Image 1 (spheres, rainbow over the protein chains, first blue to last red):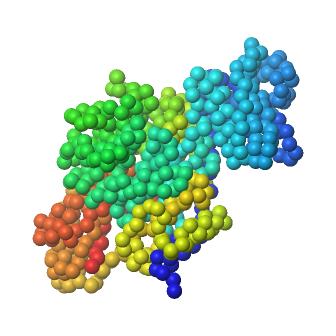
Image 2 (image 1 turned 90 degrees about the horizontal axis):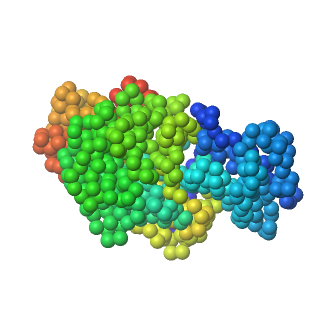
Image 3 (image 1 turned 180 degrees about the vertical axis):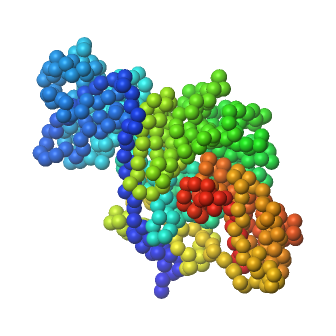
Length: 430
Length: 189
């Protein structure tokens, strides 16, 4: 005899096995570059063993630095020599190629599934070493190691920390056998290595990283009603954190990880609530008959911005996180929603409606609004942890895709998935 | 696919002892009955392959669509056949032409006390997603209020909003958007 529970478990397994996994590898292209990018030559790394190296470290570093828009990597075919040791560098050749910086390195196999990457960064004009590092890793961490090398180089050259070794979360929806399948996925910041952490035939929404990057909060409609879950990424274990009547939405972690702001409509219209994750005490922050939703914390944890239509149209308001009087922040246009703070707390990224829906930056000191993207249906802005870029969802070629734009609006990259509708990107913390 | 089968196998091994469906997480009452007729609903996977992975099976409701089972006057069948109400952009106001339709549904519910109704609020794709969940709920609640004003007990009315997550039409123009700004009236027993 098969127990009903067991039978359903078998059904789940079979469903998991046959639900085709989309090859959601994100491809990045620079659609609008800058001319004053810094020229850097990253020479292919030497490989100390037989056969082909497990990953092309130099190529990953080149791609990372290129998509920052700040740095222009020299194409490999333009390199006249391929030094892999400092004593083999001919400085004049690199100066002649107009390169400001040079990166050389080696990848060695040091044991079973053990690798060591070694690299040097030079100032070409001074002929001086700026950095030299060894990084040990296992085979499946080699791409991550390459991203860390790109972070080190980016920081040495620009003076700002790189965000290449971070991750992104997003929701991908595909049509499979007439059903809409929703996947919450985590990928490297360059879109490679996508992994599904939740799969459901019902909508998944609003992924939000915990400040330590170990957990993710999200909304799932799997029980034909909304509920907020907190899931530990390493294990896939999760707890249901909010399952009230009505809306359970917009989870947002406080910067110290102690609180989760959210939208609940259990007491009538949607309002902002704050849940103490330690004591599990729930505090109501807003009280209006209008829609209050999409809370986001300031970096110092003292303020929360949210979307409200209390004035007749959706606009951004700010309220002290401990409670108080809300104050309206946006006045330009009839639609401003889903704000999030820049890492220095001085600006808000938001969705600005007018001629289509675009990502805009609001300067909190001047009140000036600058539109960064061209629409027509851009949404869900998410800052890179170093504040350099904003990742967002955009409708392109009839489907949802992801794009990133530099905060000065000058560099735009598109991240594309081969199939399906991709939306609600969230950039991880460092 | 092979990798997923492998994960499945690991899950099976994890789950086999005692035929317990659920690992250390939550347990849903009634999941066993629901599982017999409903497809599995959602599953999570850990990033460390197979290690400590937990599968969550959750209760799902049948669609409960009960068309034709209730009593209705001969002149009302046309009106209660209309199960989708459409809305204007960023508006949660029931259109004047739809008020007689909602009243007919109220009479239908009064005549069939065994029925319950779910009002599903939806929006078009424009604007932010969580705001749209709120807007869809406002639409469904506007219909619920009209049913209550016409005598239906609020305990027989369930409201849910999917925002823009379940579009009826997949296009990106006004024709598609109008199809998607809607409240669906779903009967169950």
